[in-house]
Length: 172
Image (tube, rainbow, N blue to C red; front, top):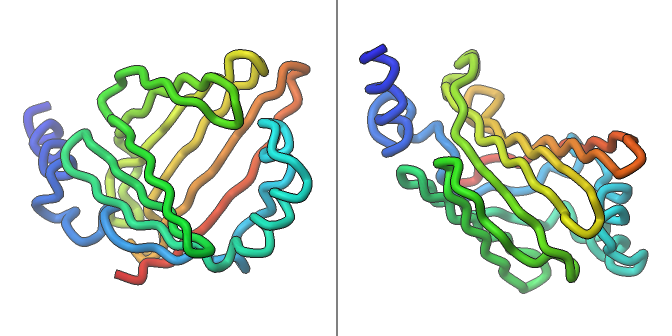
């Protein structure tokens, strides 16, 4: 519908009613609400010592997200280090190296129930080619715009499903 495409366009641009309640902003990890990531990290090849360091500093992690149209830039800051990731939310395939393995990703902005005030989620489907692992990451705004939720669902080659949810609180 024409109204639906107009609403999607405004949400993508950051204009209109979704402004200030979208993904753009600074977010602080909420370790008390989040689930451990150990199994998922181990499955993609992150060693025990690195996983323990990640666990120890998880509550100190901040994200800075800039979303403009179909472009998403996410800067993760932890322990004095910054890592940037760029996504295109228009369904184009992207490739990167993670833990020495080729990973193909496709991200899309998907309409959803706007009960929390933001009518879209970001869905990223990833394939870890050599490991034969697939992962779906769903990013959403919850709690009336004050929280950012990342839900990971990873399927291993034997069919086992691993899940973990991470929450962040808006700080700016």
